[in-house]
Length: 280
Image 1 (tube, helix red, strand yellow):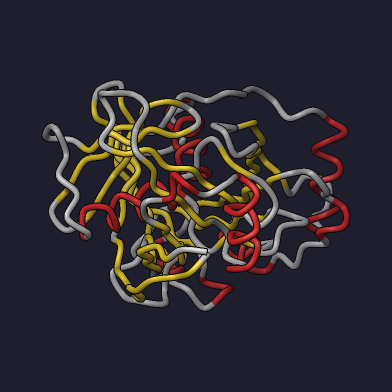
Image 2 (cartoon, one colour):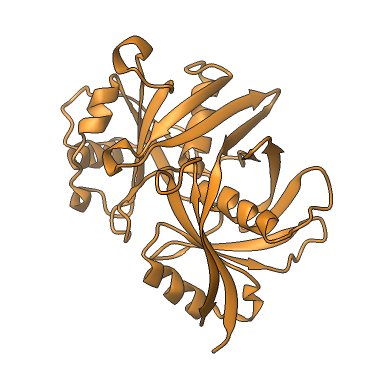
């Protein structure tokens, strides 16, 4: 047993307790895979990260990302949350950008004033969602035939597929039956009507991970990175927009999306809620 520095941060919110929490463990090189997995399951957060020495000399640090069930090669809110924790703990990047090493390779992160943004990684899977899978999603979300107006695989390492509904209120009203969607990671998006909805966002998103300790994610960087690549490629969103997520969970997540040339950046605020040590 030994002690490790530890932080718990809130991502995609500038107000504590309104975003997506993340546990961050520093100096985790000596921890076994089994110990990391066990601690991530114990936190019961959507993700827990472990900071290690980089293996690639171009990287500033390496991170391993665990859900309550398994390890992910990439995830968005853990990327921003880990970077915030690393910088706050005195981390000094080698260049103007911070370079994170993780399962998908090197991820670029930049500072935008008080916010951080990561470069959306390439999709590992894209294209139409198979009819049988889409039928499972429709049943699981309790939707009628025709409610899903578009659907696409947007998997950048976390397995996401996304469906679009016509109206924001449909998204907020969803009461999913997770038993109908085992093994799937499902994002749901709909455009906001600024005059009617009165929100400072252009889209409302919800993210469902049936079987996980947190079956709904309150603010999701990887999903929104995948959705952004889909929407922007098809001309369904402007070059810069804001996503609202987590409202039905009592959160107020805000994800900033911006296309700069050929690059898509996903950003938001991060605040630290807990700093201390833990024994593992």
